[in-house]
Amino acid sequence: MKIVVTDAMTVTQGDVDINIFAKYGDLVLYDNTLPHQVAERACDADIVLCNKTLFTREVLEQCKSLKLICLFATGYNNIDTVYCHDHGITVCNAGSYSTDAVAQHTFAMILEHYSKVGRFDAFVREGGWSKSPMFSPFVFPTDEIAGKTIGIIGYGSIGRKVAEIAKAFGMKVVVYTRTPRDNDVKYLSLDELMAESDIITVHTPLNDGTKGMMTYERFCLCKPTALYVNTARGGVNDEQGLVRALAEGKIAAACIDVLTTEPQTKDCVLNENVPNLIMTPHVAWAPLSTRIRLLGIVDENVRLFLEGNPHNVVS
Image (cartoon, rainbow, N blue to C red):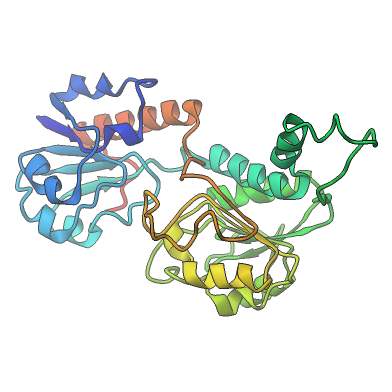
């Protein structure tokens, strides 16, 4: 049994042990795999473990021994699951491993926008407080999130966790989802949610129905004081439309953890010149305890597949 890990550095910087998979056979680790290298490295693998490596039909056609792809991720838009289904290749994701981490990061961004902790810290370190005649120099505008309306787009495990935290803060919760489940929140159409919310946060997968859905026209429906947050997938954004909405004041600010193309390219329209934008480099999912949990889930996925009882199957 040959097991190939195509992008180990996306899971560990040496702080978690990816060699646990060696117990299943001959383990080959690659820190990163560029698109033109995928077929060559995976062509004789029985099992592939990957995070964001792209497995297209053209690549998969060359992987004649491949029986299982296990993702170090919940999303699987980088895998041609139709081809896998048609050719008997099982694809398993990691389920809800990052729910708490992504919800936490979502609120870290929201709280930074409303409380300005980072900006106040920089102000103090640069001598602003020591030069102030006031004991409390509130030089940056802040606000409470209690009583604010948070609009949650996508109501899977992360969306529901965000709603739970929002309620603890005393916020009003509205939701847009194609599959309403509970009666403890108010469901709206997407356009209604955009218009009604003080905070809009995205927790939907990237697919044909969500790609590019957050357009300039949708941002124009928002309150000019609204905050937009995306810790899901960058492809949900029309990035040029978001830049325009920020520049024209259609929304007050945006907090982004994901981009359409990652890592960020030099010509990315979401850059340091965009006003009222906070960005992090796709790290909402990445706390140490989260990645330890992730490896445990993927390890279990491999074990159960080899026992003939695959779990977390998406194709």
